[in-house]
Image (cartoon, rainbow, N blue to C red):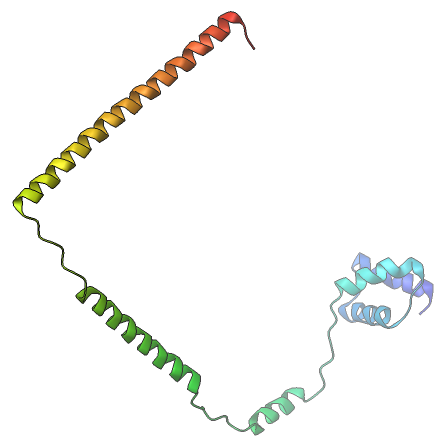
Length: 163
């Protein structure tokens, strides 16, 4: 193909005037031949835009079907790995269940408290609640004092014009 014929084919391609067969022929020519420098960009574009459709030999489907039919049927082999995985899972569950049962059955019982010890626990609980309330009240007052100090510092700085 001459340079002028190639230019005419490429221009027709970009104008959309080529049939699919002509586009494929142009693609095949550009893929198989060296072109002048001025056509390198067009060659890259045409090769990217026109998909390459490989030719499928006649009778390929029938030959593939016949080959598949001749393949021996695979027997379902029993695999050892899934069986062992299942057995080990059951064993792990049994060990876990027995360990949990032993743990809970061998725990010492909670000690029983007499009336005097129950009264002491209740008094200790009331004392802790009182301490907690007083501590919260002191913390709240401390926060309020901090806020007052910040406001006072702002007012003093404003009047003394510190920056």
